[in-house]
Amino acid sequence: MRRVLLYSPPMSKEQSQQLFQEIISHCKEYGFIFPSSEIYDGLSAVYDYGPYGAELKKNIQDYWWRAMVQLHENIVGIDAAIFMHPKTWKASGHVDAFMDPLIDNKDSKKRYRADVLIEDALAKMEEKIEKEVEKGQKKFGDAFDRDKFLATNPNVLRIKEKINAYQERFKKALDENNLAELKQIIVDLEIACEVSGSKNWTDVRQFNLMFSTEVGSVADEASTIYLRPETAQGIFVNFLQVQRTARQKIPFGIAQVGKAFRNEIVARQFIFRTREFEQMEMQFFVRPGTEMEWYEYWKQERMKWHRSLGFSPERLQYFDHIKLAHYANAAVDIQYQFPFGFKEIEGIHSRTDYDLKNHQELSGKKLQYFDPDTNESYIPYVVETSVGLNRTFLAVICNAYRTELLDDGSERVVLSLPPFLAPVQIAVFPLVKKDGLPEKAKEIFSELRWDLRVFYEEKDSIGKRYRRQDAIGTPYCITIDHQTLTDNTVTLRDRDTMKQERISIDRLKTIVADKVDWKKGLQ
Ligand code: GAP
Image (cartoon, rainbow, N blue to C red; front, side, top):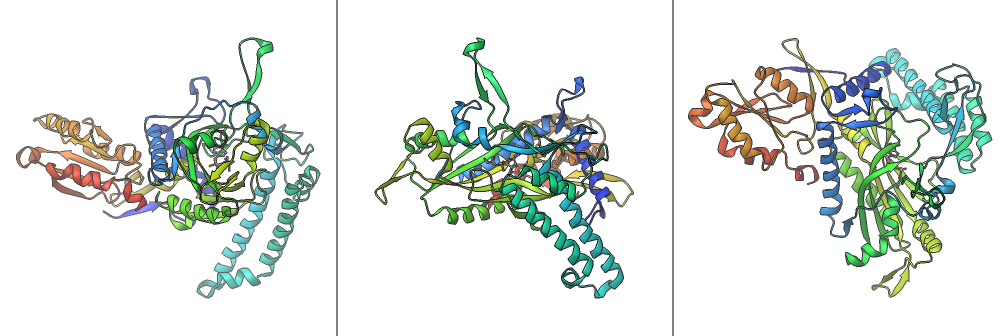
C-alpha cells in the first residue's frame, strides 16, 4: 500500500507548532505522558509518565546503562541519594554560581530568562536569512546556488553582520557577568514581552536555581538542604570508595541515573524543560593533561549513541557553549532538531579537577588517586557526559511520530520507535473471539512473554487493533486465525511496512527476538 507522509520537511513554523501540539496530545491520549495532578487542573510544567511512557523511559534508561556500563569494563554504576550534605553544594559552586539571569516585564509581570530572550531574538534574525534564501530560490529557480547566495547577497550579509555583533556583545556580557549590558542588549534588540507587548523591563538580576528545604523535625535543629540540581556530585563524593571497591584504575568512569531538580525560571516546551527531571550522567576520571583527548573521544562516542536511536545525522548537531558552566574548561552540547528547533539533549564537559579539589578542600579529606603506572598521587581530571532522560524521550517520540495518508484515503498515526525501545514489542490477536482462537492465542502469549514485552487483545476488528498498536509503536503484531489450528502458522505484521508474512509458531520467538534485539542499535 502506498503511504504519503503528512508533515515532511521543510516545514513552516505553523506546521512545526501544529505537529508539536499533535505529539503532546498523542502522548496523553495513548498513555505516554499526563499533566501531573490533572484532577486539580495540573501543576505547571510537571508531568507523569503513563503505562507506555514509563515503559519507554525505562527502556531508554536501560539502553543507556547497557551502552555505558555493561559494554565498558572500566565504567561502573552507582545510585546515590538525592539529599546530600549541604556543604556539597558550597564546594561544587552551586550555592554561589548556579544562577540564571532573570528579567520581569513590568506590565505583564511575566518573568523571563534574559539570556533566553536574547537567544530567541537572535534565532529570529537567523530565520530572516532563511526567508531571504527562499526569496532567492524563487527568483533564480534551478540556477540558484545557496552557498554563493549566502556569501554575496547584501541583505543576508547585513543581517549576518548584525547577528555577529550582538553575539559578541552577548558572550562578553555573560563572561563578565555584566547584568546591565544584558539588559541593554534586550533594549537594543527591541525585544517585547509576548504577553503585554511592551518593552517595559526591570533590571536583570541573578536567580539561584536550587530548591531548598529543611531537614529535621524540630525547628532549631533544622538545617537547610537542597534537592540536587545534578546527579554528578553523588559521584564525586563517592569517587575514592567506588575506585577502591570496584578495583578500578584510571582512566575509569562512574555512571548514574537519577532525578535532578532546578527551579527553572521558565519551564516550557512540554517535557523539554521541567523543574524535576532525570539525568543519565557519567564522570570519567583521567590523568591530568589527557582530558582533551578523552573529551574528544566521548564527544564522538555519545554522538554514535544518539544516532543508534534512529536519529538521522541531519537532525543532530554539536553546539559549542557560548558561556562555560562555572566548573568547565570546555563544553559542547549535542542538539536534536525538535519541532521547535535545534536544542540540547546532552552536555559533554571537561570539568578539570574543579569538583574533587573543592570537595577535598572543604571536607578536609584527601581525594587523591595513587597511580601505580607513574608512582604519583594526584587529583584526577574529569570528563563528563550528561544526557537528559526526559529530553531523550521527547526526541525519540518526535523522531518516531508520523501521520500517513493511505491509498484508501484513511490516515494512520504511527510511532516508528526503534523496536528495542518499544513499550510493547509484539501484540497477539485472535482473529475472532470464538472457535478456539482466543485459547490458542493466549497459549502463544503466555509463551512469548518470558522473553518479550507482549500485549494481548481480542476486542474490536483486527484493523482497529492494528491501528492502536501502530499508535503506541508496537513493531510486530501476530494474528491467530483458523489456519493456525491446522498448520501451526500465524501472520506476522510489520508496523512500518504494514506487510504480513505467514510464519511457523516454532520460529516466531527466534524471529521476533532477533528483530527487537537491543544489540542491533549498538553494533
Ligand atoms: N552535570 C552536568 C549538567 O547537569 P547540564 O547541561 O546542566 O549539565 C545536562 O544538564 C542535561 O540534563 C541536559 O543536556 C538536559 O538534557 C538535561 N536537563 C538539564 N536541565 C533540564 C531541565 N530543566 N529539564 C529537563 N532536562 C534538563
